[in-house]
Image (cartoon, rainbow over all chains, first blue to last red; front, side, top):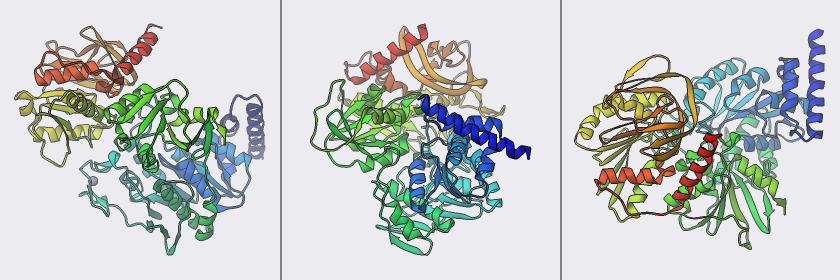
Length: 401
Length: 230
Ligand SMILES: [Zn+2]
């Protein structure tokens, strides 16, 4: 009885705190309320998650997009922490806001254990694992080790793990878990896993697969892309993703694989997903000054490598880099980004760390300029790549077209 | 031909330190110096080189790199006069002993009288030092406490940050130079990149090479020394 009352009080506290936070303009009203609620009733998230079908999505890159694709693909009303607040407080606030029996929740990589423990997901989607903000987060291998324990527990409760077979760190973490649906999304980034996550020997790679002499090998995937078609288990169908890039086709593939596990018709889900053309401002076409731009978010080397493939073409490109708390204070990762592919194009360097970027580009042989003044307006959409807080700034300083 | 060897980038390339190789190559190339940057993978023989670059790395790979370099006869290459520029894990490996995770101690390459133990807290943040009167800026991220032998010269004195021990940073033993600064440090400090090249080429000075890197250096110095003075 007391427990129920306490949970009710906690839920009310989440709502009222978020309402105050929004009204006073002090926050986006998603995290503070969740924190208050969890303080009053530590079991609140678990209670909120009970009796719902939940998909949890984690990984270094693409989790917000994949979460949005899974929400769209599921259809109807789906609870989700679509503001990107992906620690327990953010998940709590999302589940207070929406009572739908279905939820897709994005989880911070380091908080996956706590989030899974509390929400008992039916499916856990693990996209990838690479370097991100090394000055804050610990080393990637340590996260992979923690994930192993998470998967073992989740599996014993009947959860299905949808995991990226192309990423050796993910495979290392999920290799011994049963109930894994392996996916093979298109992947170009290999720099974090040139040595085996299990034994540190060099990984071998052929065009088809990777393997290590210790026995860690790329599992054969049941979900993969075949030309423009997607194969998920026994189903084969065209994959109509509106978001640009092969990276997003991979995200869609993994979201679809997860939806099959919660009983969604995969072809219908794919059609619903095609309606997604913008995720939290990403890929959105907006206006800055008089210039029409397309905003692209990339937070780390793997994200940038994927995004640079998508901005192919010629002409000017804008790139904006900050190194604030949410970005990580050290922009040395710029040297891990293959900016050399931009040779022959002109890059306008923006953001707090535009000189770091311009220097990186100078060493890459790319024509770059640091321009404080207003740009020459071009009669076409210019792609703007930005990292986390730089992206937020651009979103704030731009207008819808 | 100046041969720059980036040593085991798959093990020692975690913190953008591979950039030090690009920087040296580009600064040499743009001056018309015949130069080659070789990425020496761990599954191949260690190629001969004039400059060996050792970068930062995680604990396990750092230990493996020591074993591989021992087997590859790295010490002999250094004895024969090759230059070494090392950062962070690379610095620790060059010493006689180091501890990484836990209290386990590992034998280093023993090329320099330096011992690294595990510090009580991790040093993460901007690192500002002085190298023979010139400001050097970088970013450190390590859990080591390094003590250099009485006869070993430090690379720099610490103005802000931790370095070896809060007072000194790195060491310079003949043609072995080492610092805790990432950044990559040679990108942030173009004068230091040129000092490495000059040392390797046995030249007293190189022709000036103005670029945006100079503006970056001045800007980082301004921002970091102002904050240090606060
Ligand atoms: Zn292995």
